[in-house]
Image 1 (cartoon, rainbow, N blue to C red):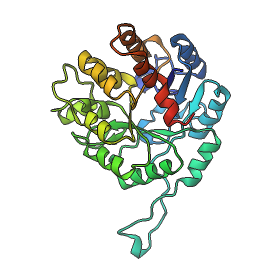
Image 2 (cartoon, rainbow, N blue to C red):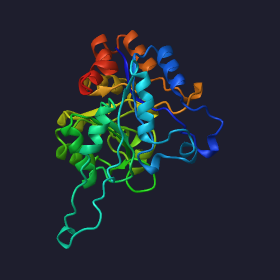
Image 3 (cartoon, rainbow, N blue to C red):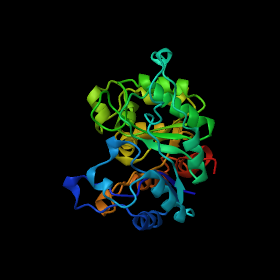
Image 4 (cartoon, one colour):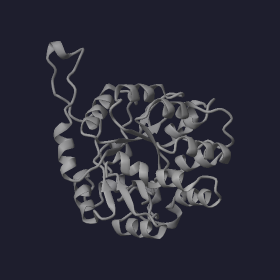
Length: 309
């Protein structure tokens, strides 16, 4: 079984890209059929303001719950995630003795409702806060209590873009992994995948670095150390990471075959928006660069395991 761990449905266009086709449920299912993908994980949009552009706000049913209710019509092909913002659940005014240690938000009621809507995980988290922000740690721990993995969009240091930010070397991700050890965390996006290589600069965590990987970065080391870390191969960031240096990429796929997840993150419904990650993996299989066992784990078995399907 092949499972795409990262899909969206909705209007992700910016106002200067209104000529692009949106992803509808019909276009998503058609793409899955064409690429011979059995199931897809649907990540609802709109939980955090950083990832919402103007057109999305005016689209039908832009809220998370409406998207999840619609997704249930496609349960034979779609696995839904709920979505949260770690900044949710402010407790209101603080008592004097709480100023230095404010109470943590309780997400349990929301998570329980997500489970009732057949959600198998939480994400994609796009809030532009520190990866190891106490609110993020709190939310991840609670998701782990319910057995739900958390998929994160990761970016470089500082404010101004969407995603959880971290410095070179992933120190904040390491803290989150240690303090949420009972939660499966799935990394994604440029800030995560740039760390496949060592000796990078902060700006590398916002782009798709090219060229050979001469020394390994923090990502391989974290994958070896933390069994609760998984890597989402979707988008240009994931495909670039495993293909920019073919030999290194093949070694990476083999070594971390138990922690890698195939995904696409297609954001537009036109041909230009396609992400050829599955074709790349199929070609490696056909060339005997990876074997069937590695291919099967990355494209489906690992997802089945962490989603408890």
